[in-house]
Image (cartoon, rainbow, N blue to C red; front, side, top):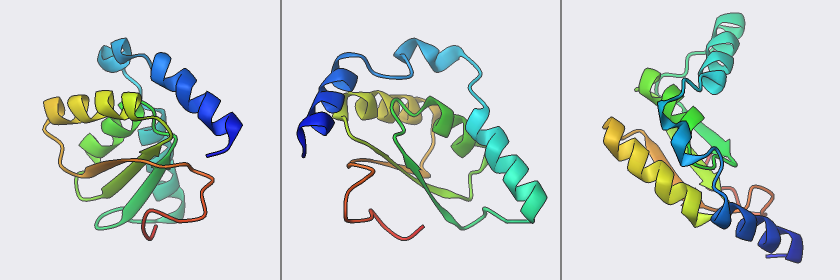
Length: 114
């Protein structure tokens, strides 16, 4: 990991984003984007794999995954602390279609096929 990535990781470990308090807020941006994309292109997300790079605490992704239950999501972030929050929220919501991983989004290896 380069020096800048290490500093970014340290910052998000200290200040997870979105804030864990965002859980009650209606964060539909990603869901809206996926819905519009599907409507405009006739793309069917069912039985597809979607990568969310830089997921943070996962609040936006969790909202989308709750609506798109037949879609498999892989969420990556550079920092474990926000991902641990995301895993807790995901478990509270009863979702099983998201996998959370620590990874750099600009790394050489892709965490799967998307």
